[in-house]
Image 1 (cartoon, rainbow, N blue to C red):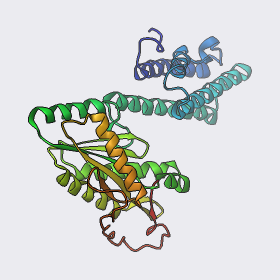
Image 2: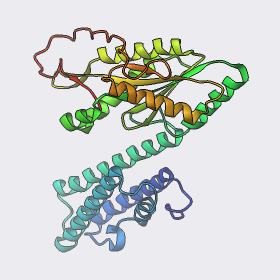
Image 3: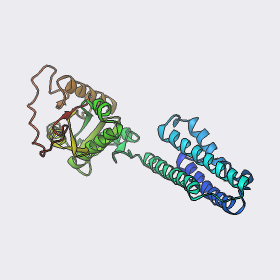
Length: 320
């Protein structure tokens, strides 16, 4: 079977762990119900999981909360399984229904956690952010360089925009990270709906995103990004119990030119984004057009949200 910590991707290693635990739970059933708990080393955790954990902790996945949660569920499952076998060996009686369900329930939780991690690793390998469905930062540089090379060959303009949810930290601090995740997913959905199929959007990390608008001048790009900004401002994000959040975002927009490499384009977009934040947030700043200290473009009011007694329905939550 090999060492899942050597020569396998994290996802491959989890597949080995799952196969081994399926065999283990079958042996545990036979030991608990037909062998009076006489299981020898069958109560011990299969070796593949320990090897996989050691490999992930030694690499870039160290201290990931999802992995630590999987480890905790695994320990609880095997501790409970050992107790059931010990009692069966002592009394000669099979487990009660409650004792059996305690082990079976933890086994189901363990398998569900494994599957979630497998999907997350699969999404990461594909270059997709599992939360938003947008492309992740991985591969972004290559995609932007490809667009720059096309621009240099055929002089077809393109723009990039850096986007940052306003005062996003306050969302996490006030409502928790689960609601923060909903906000990120909703923001990504607005972006996906608002750009063309051949444009590209990336989640750079946290609440920051990058949009690449192909075959687009700065003036055209400004219209697209301004529409995204307004769509986001007018959107309402349900957070449960009839409550909704309203958020805004700031944008820095830059157009490609023949002298500026991609890395410098991103730096310029980041500076324009910083200028948008400094000027009051919830606005689009165009690099080289909108000067610091100039009067910002008017911000259209959001459409009125549906009436509701929920106190946060009309509250606008902005990110930093």
